[in-house]
Image (cartoon, rainbow, N blue to C red; front, side):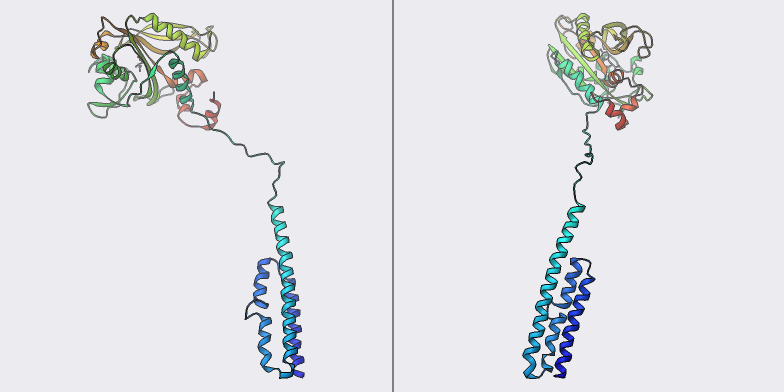
Length: 347
Ligand code: DAH
């Protein structure tokens, strides 16, 4: 009987141990480990008490077993309830931490925009496509023949000095002008021809208004009876669409080997309307492109009868057009990809 009392004490001690230990638990995770120590599995402390059965006199075994089982049921119920409570509290805490504050300002999504050079290129294409021009994309690597010789600029011609060329070999070079595309088109098509050729060109040139790589857009029209008047009529339309309705053009004599006569085209200053300002350097006019009537020699180099057909051509600098339009004074701003600049140049 004495022994049984001692063992019953063990049951009471273990119960107290469970009560005390449970108070110190900080999380359901800790409780899980605690349950393993006391009630779960064969090695749980409560189950260990059953091992004492062999020391108990036969007539008291039943009473002892009942007490241990009672402790076990109590512990399971007690710790199970505690587990439920703890998990509920933990969930509430999580919900609170994850709460969405609908009064917080939303994260702003800044949409991208096309690069100003691409925008300018698209605008120019739009204007000329509206006049019936087709796009021809030439290649950036050209032969000396297409870039110079066929354009009436043979070796040692002084006009070669106008364009500092990157030669890849004596025969191949990076095209210095989209004019090279004129020859490919005229070699492969019969007039009437009306093409627009946008693309990158390369020159060994680098300062505030020049870059070793820049973009041009070439235009070429060849048909019967084409004159300088057709060129001027088309240019009038072009400047109005790009720089505004009130813009006028003026042609100044110039020189390009592939056109005769050649002209430099100015438009009335779209900033001051022609009165004279900083942009037009007080002249009221801004130079926008080079153009001219296609030189008979160029037509003949391509197998086109210059007694039957004539044409005009023009070349526009895309960066220059963008710089004028957006009031940029350094071409590098267009190539540095500074988002603060690019965001302002969104049409
Ligand atoms: N290719 C010339 C240049 O890069 C621009 C040019 C001038 C093109 C007159 C033309 C033209 O087609 O007729 O400076």
